[in-house]
Image (cartoon, rainbow, N blue to C red; front, side, top):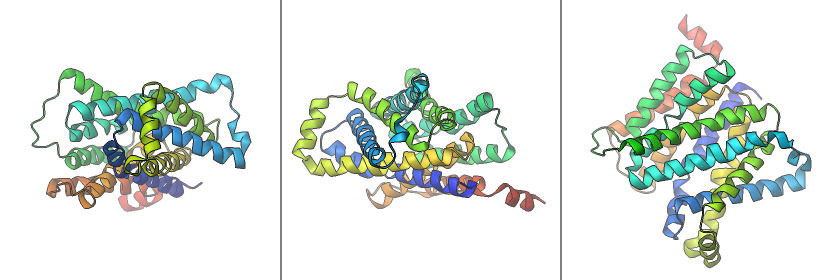
Length: 299
């Protein structure tokens, strides 16, 4: 796969992740909390991908037991712990603050990539990273806010960004040995098992059985459109891109989420939010351009 196609895969994944509010709000209204919604996402993703592999390519189920740590990393350390920290921030602080702290993740990806993979931190990446961080702050509407964070909440918020970033690191290692579909399947299985253990499974079953507010359809939607497909696309792109680059490209997600909030749910907007979205999109464009193009423009 070419770099341009890998870039498209990551941006497409971020776009689908950005649509998640369409499903989470409906499931919240049906009576499910954030941890239960996470359990539904991962369970539907695991079952859906498992059925796909069962009927198309059973060889992709094969892994070595000594490699389970990779999927423990992507499924539990990355997805489950990230969700727990992020949902705690949303519950006890302003959602906008939670979003900004979550999107410190590109910083962690860049630093860990340099440490573990000897990836170069180029001026181009630093510019894109600066644009991304500034854009996320503006999109979240933090400037001018009056919210106060306790040291513990600040630590939890930064932890959400750190755990979110570890997916790119664990994923890069796993993709050197396994197909993106294999990685996605075992990631979902690990995350589903952990999140189900932390959830009130009885309430999940009763809510879906009653199909309150079409909960079953929204559960399938969040599991397939916002979990299964985007993680397959992201894994495919991550296999052919540097982790830091993929991490910054994925910050197209808050732009999509903000647009849905504005046009679907009537969220407030303003000049600063629009400027922030423009900055994030600019960072994506900077990283999407081929190196040869950047070199010609700098001459």
